[in-house]
Length: 336
Image (cartoon, rainbow, N blue to C red; front, top):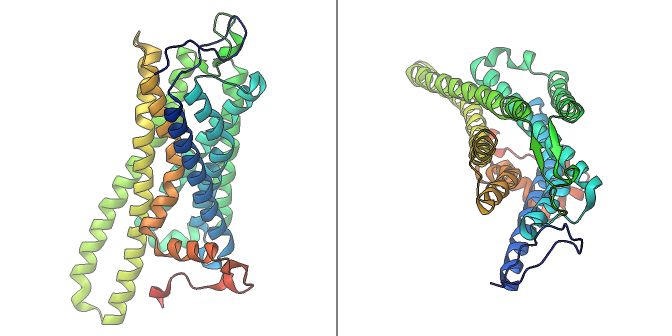
């Protein structure tokens, strides 16, 4: 390890730059670049799949598409800048980009959380009230959900900044040059914690617990009725319920991954804001990386659990989607 002191800028008030062995820096940058590419490429495949294949043009999938768009934008606009800052311990992009970066990051985080909440609501109605699902969850309703996600997230972002809920480190003359961090007031720190994490996560967890309770009850009912149903009716019923349960399970896993990625980060924020404890920088940076990884996990989850995603991925990679008739390809052959 090089013990030589280095600074972010030549200014006398510059922050210290992180000094590492060259090979360590190469590994960190390679890992970061791989994470960014995985996030961007994976979510781009999801976006193309839901946009191109007509079988995927369902109200429910519009919510997943909105989530993928938010995660894709995280990979483009947030991850590269923040990961460079974490590795170098320096912000090289100026005060204006620091402000823009923060606004975009808060917006996209809020959109992702609200999309996950609406996805949980959608799955809850699909499993718990299936007979009325098609009349309750229509394309206009989902479009309203998505518009609400983006509009409310934008409004929250504006309110947070307008009412001085945060202070940028570059506004403080006592903080060294080369940082791009924000400091929440105690009140707004609590508001942000409740509004963007505790409340939506409580709603999601409650809904998915209810979903799995109802799904188990449906399974028992189907099994008890199976002897009284003819084979064709039984197969159709089983297939429909199995499809809804699998969708709920897969999206439930996506929610669980979201919680695992974000809980450590928020615990650090809570401890640092309301106690005199200061999280070691290396620990906080690791949890920040974990937050960004969450944006790249969802396409991996889809690839592992959805055969249609695997098939659409092959069609995209082989450029067969350029065929005018490719949008009509059957991605669910097991249903026919």
